Length: 274
Image 1 (spheres, rainbow, N blue to C red):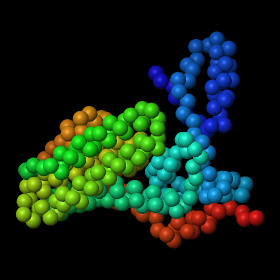
Image 2: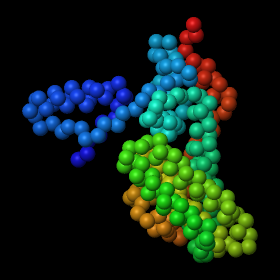
Image 3: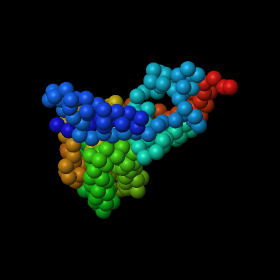
Image 4: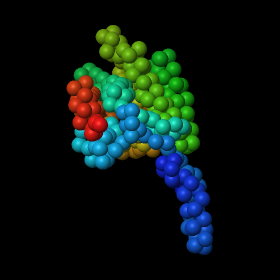
C-alpha cells in the first residue's frame, strides 16, 4: 500500500518531522507516509480569501452556483503546485467555457447528435477510417501515456493539460474529417468515422473520471458502458464499442458561463471594501 498525504505547504514541517516522530515514539505499527504532496496558496482576485469579510467564494456558495465538476476542473487544472495561484472570475469563465464546454462538451454533443440524425442511436456498420484516424490514434496513444506518467508523479496541472489536449485531438479530428460532408458521397466511410468518434466518448469518460467524475458518469451512462477498465493500447480502446451498440444522446454536459453571471458573482463575492 502506498500512503500519500495531500496538504498545504504550511503543514509540511509538522507532517514530515513532529508527526512521524510521534507515531514512531508510540511504538505502535502505524503506517508512515510514503509521499507528501504539498500545495502553495490559492489567492482570490488580487488578495486573500476572507471568511470574516465575505471575500471569496466558499464551498457551499460555489455548489449553489454551479455543479461540482466546474469547480473541480478549475481547481485541479490551476493547482498551486510550484507557486501560488490566483482565482479570478474571468479566468474561471474562460476555463469552463473553453475547456469544458467548447472542447469536451462540444465534441460529445456533435458526434452523438450527428450519429442520431444519420444512423440512429446505435453505432453504424461498414466503412473504414483513413490516415487522419491513424494519426489521431498515434497522438492519443502518446498523450495518454504522458497523462498516466503525470498522474503517477502527481503532477496535477501537467496531467490536466494533457487531458485537455486529448479532448482537443478528438475535436480536431472531427473538424478535419468532417463526416457530415463525407456522408453525402460515402456514407460507409462516414459511419467508420462516427464509430471512432463514439468510442472516443467512451475513452474520454474513463480518462476524465479523476478530474470530472460526474460528467464522466453521465458520458458512460449515455454510452451504456459499464466496463470502466483503464485503457491499454489506444487502437484497441477505440474499437471497444462495436457496430450495433446502442447509446443515448446525452443532454448538454457543460453550460457556458455568461458575462452577466460572471459579473454578478464577481460583485457578490467581492467582500467588504475599506
